[in-house]
Length: 158
Image (tube, rainbow, N blue to C red; front, side, top):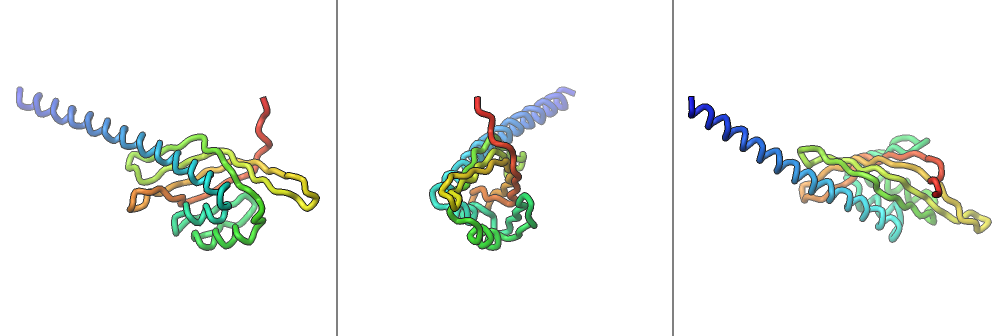
């Protein structure tokens, strides 16, 4: 009887340790994913959205643009973005990241602004929100598997 209690205690103890380890690993990955999305946004501003998306998308990525048809494959997304207004600047601010317990899938969401100068020389901006589903690559880096977004009103000024 004492052996069974000891064995039960040990199984419970190891389960607790394992769950704490998974939690700590998930938290580490969540922080890494959020920072990766921030780096993605900085890259978009520095070298352009098309180039940034090409660098941060999984090769099998799917883009679900607001008001447009789905676009499959990183290269197709890149070529479509290059054909659009290349003078526009796409910037976003990640708000949150979550990672699955398995630490191989996660998501980020946030708000974006796209800005451009119109033919009259006036700065124009459009606002929106996005959700990206990320997949961890064999090399440990995170890449966007699904990108989706839609427009929203301008942010509240306080």
